[in-house]
Image (cartoon, rainbow, N blue to C red):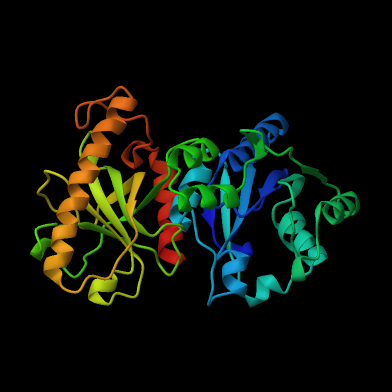
Length: 346
């Protein structure tokens, strides 16, 4: 049985009950991880499944499609991450007109009670749910008393004296402070996906790239970066990456293009993860391809220097020692296989 479901009707029936956590989980930062781990611990204590519920698209994306919020994590990566945290079932519920129209009472009765048999429901700070965000933790507790489950709000997680939040992480990324972002996330910031074919322009210019698309999502970053690419061989590969719409060639759709140094191989169809180390510059529109190529050489040289320093800072040597980072190929096969469904049905 799949551990991932996209619709309420496709969700698991839990005859002995379940423990449920609900959240956007964008980024799966330290606060999110604490919520999921606590849910899993409570489920194990009660001998019932742990269910992590989220939504795709995120409600803010659904209600503001022309100005969607920047995403820290794409749907597949979110599903994989929740499963890797030992949630027994992950629901990425399709947030559409029907689901958004459910009031708090109906959402609780149909989803939490009738389908999942919730015995406990755990949420994070400032939790809202139901039509027009009409429900909060107070409403959830009242409905829990009426329907036979306990509702709890987990204590916020703090880092450097402030509450961990996706907003803080986005601000750190925009400021180019990847160390701060990593501290809030509990891991280096990275974007993963399946390599797709591009326009082959980079190869023509002497900079072949591995390209990742965003499936209509808005990335949290834009510009040129020094990066490590994971999932190509046993060690991370030093690289320089461009994330944006490629204004010099009149691009529109956001694209992540990673040029791996000293590498010549076919990566199409392979899943990789691009870890961001340093911001080099903003995305610019150049007058011609010759000017663009000259700048790309400067970017590559700067990225190489920064990555050598980054490896030294971590007491590592590029290409010879594993960096302390999640390799998507080493994840248990169950989360990866289950998350394939999110990618296919998102």
